[in-house]
Amino acid sequence: MVEGADDERSLRRLGVEGRIFRASGSGKTLLNFLEGLAGFKQIIILTDFDRAGDKLAKFSTEHLKRLGVEPVVEFREKLKAILRKDVKDIEGLARFLRGQRIALKH
Image (cartoon, rainbow, N blue to C red; front, top):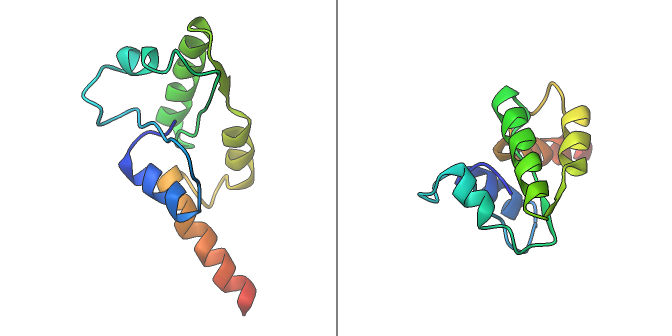
């Protein structure tokens, strides 16, 4: 689960396969969007690393648990800790990693 289309594109550029759900742009309220995920066993939450992303991750975690879905936030927490000053959002992740690859080649 990501926030928007740019986040999904970034993950696809990184080679992430499988279903990616976008919280925005669905035309649904956030609660309706989360209720639509009720049939899944687990959902990985990869919201942005800013204050709004923190709030969305917390809100989504709480509601998914109530729906019987296990929210997986470990990836987001690890990325946030590692990338603290360099990347503030998921859409910047692919750009950052591409830059790191180039820097390592020199």
